[in-house]
Length: 240
Image (tube, rainbow, N blue to C red):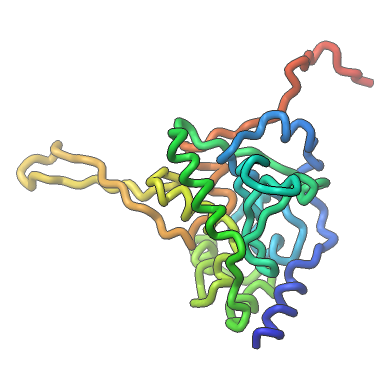
């Protein structure tokens, strides 16, 4: 089962020939503006990516946490979860030729940012139990006939570690370790049954297995950072 699961994971991780929605991002521009604890979203092209894009209604199918080069050797600066290699560190060259987006947590305290990155680094080396191939088989059909409101749930099915192949689950756990919100469930609670206006907000943490890469893009607590050059002047563009 372990051998079969590893083979299936490699098959699903292989690239497809589908056309990307975004043009390849400028890595130099990304390097110039990215900061530690930023989340990098990637428009992947694997069979995994095709299924994730369909199930999440988004072009973003992968996410990585930027921790900087000071913490890692050999030019590595990202922590990501890969279904074949497990939780690993990679450099910028891993995302060359892909559409990218930077999502930055607003107002995150410096000490909490260090805690988030430390939590991610502590998971480096963790591997997936690929014996539970049921979790992988559901990705063989990139566009299953599942109602829209149930698609996110499909990503969290199964009991084995491959459910964390949605790398955003790893990053969500790290941010939730310092109680930083991504897409919390906010409930209106009435403390006094005789006072209809006596309401307060009660926040609930969404389970990490339900997070997808696009959640960092649509979260009101993460800013989208676009690497526009400082010397940009639209009047000087070489229009034909």
